[in-house]
Image (tube, rainbow, N blue to C red; front, side, top):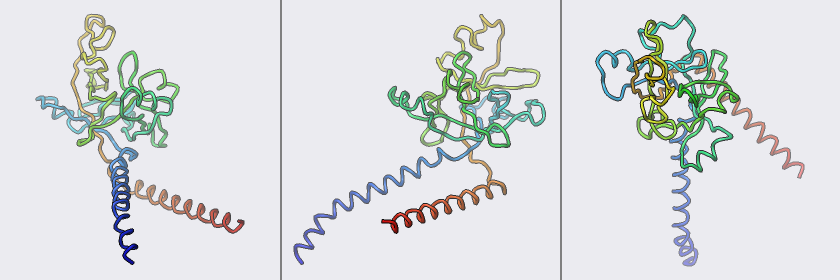
Length: 250
């Protein structure tokens, strides 16, 4: 009996260590679960600017004609021409190891592009630094990531930092597109939209933050989630049945 007690005492640290490791793994999984959730994206200005904060604060990020825009109250997009960003992080197969080897953290980013829920990759155009979306063949030659977010506020990052710029491309319709300031020079490198000397025109630009925002759960979303749970349950039951049949054969 004494030996049994001593053995149990000796085993306690190992058991506690295993339990703590499991708990830590569960917490880490729960913490990262948000990355696979489909969310909308909104805009925030890092510092208040009169005349602009009211316009942009909380505005939706939208997709149109393979580019990413901001839909604010005064923007004049044609009716039904934009689709709200509704996306999540997804490992980018050909680049994950390369990014990790370069010391980056993050993944690819996808969004639905229409009501049929077709997905496209979100990327930064290598030449113009515009935020765009497209199929893999379109994204691959450009900068596909890594995309990530800050640990507390879940603000979007690209290549490890927040360098998102809103550019007014159409003053008459007050349409602003999203860019990423890859070289941290205000998009002023030769040939970029902020290079007034080369382009011959001045454009309005604002530093913005992109915030992941949980989508409002409507009736359709609730039904989709219920169907997915039923499918997962049936799939698990089928797997268990197949394992049982294999056991009987043995």
